[in-house]
Image 1: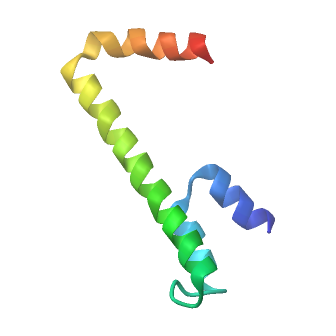
Image 2: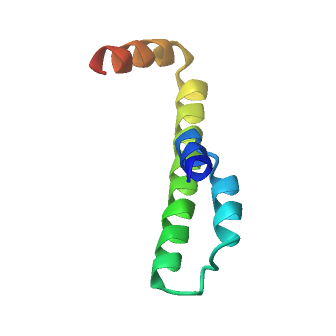
Image 3: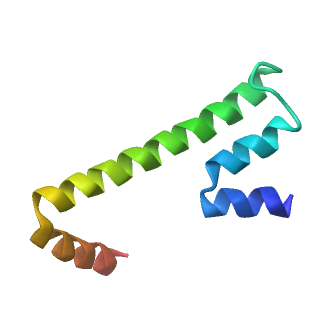
Length: 75
């Protein structure tokens, strides 16, 4: 279980999906479908986040440094 947990924490979603495929298939039951759905949703959201950050950087390169500092302060 440590391997799976480590991969999830590292955001290695392709590896998480490959690992799960050794135990279950998407169509096996509703729980399998739900876990695969959540993994794919997380992959999509992270890709979307990277795209938005890239767009912000390209659109306003000087503001990115400021936004980064604001985010660190708010943490």
